[in-house]
Image 1 (cartoon, one colour):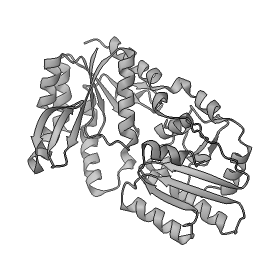
Image 2 (image 1 turned 60 degrees about the horizontal axis):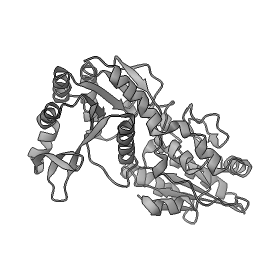
Image 3 (image 1 turned 90 degrees about the horizontal axis):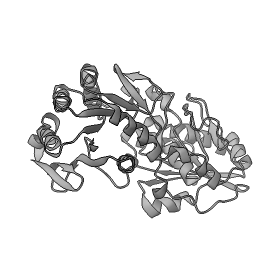
Length: 375
């Protein structure tokens, strides 16, 4: 089945979401789909283009006119779908429902195309904080139900049976095991503990809860040392300021290292220095209590135990995960140390426990629904 995987933004090598999209597309191919990826790209010279894989579909030009074209006109994509005989369009939601995107999906349905919409995080209304983001969200809230009238299924990582009036395909975030290495080193934790967190840092990651816990811990001048290695770019000034302020307040400079974005061998090397991973500690801040995050699965694929606060049915009963309350309390560092020192499961056992969460297995659920949809 000819399938177009549509993304309303570009790819970045270090970005986990970009990797996820490529993994999903590869998994659909393994299931039997003929997949092309359509994405939006901004060149170094400021030019804006719609791309099909590595080829230019439409050059929108530069400046404000190009930005407007991107948001208002999807004619090049519709023409490509018709010309290539695309049978299914899989859209990754950008929370951009509006009259123009509604027209786009309506035209797809007129061409007899199956339409799936993936909503990576649901609900998402509390994820926005800046003024511009709230304007976009307001527009999306006005039009998203109308948009979804032309959607056959919504792909979700939540437990919801229906979203915006449409039936869902419920999957878990998956793993491409061939691209995520098992950690090659395992250290003793009798003398010190190294924690690692990897994310594009948002307020709902809750790393401040860990920093406050470290502040309380080091306030008692302990002999046993705990180090936190934080990899990733802050998503905004608020996140950057909050983390820097807490490090200064609690004099954590010797114990907390900020690396910025890393990928490839550099990231693998940092993982090989670590003992235990930090998942999301504050998804409740965005109104989310039940979610199957990609990061938890990546940690497990690398062979790491981890701490997190949300409900995740794939991990809640695993012997290598530590749950903390979904609230604003600091993370108890003594409890974390005790958990890590008593954890006996091996990295290989952790990785093997999630073999069923491969992207091929997860996207197979999607592909099987696609082929059942009647035109």
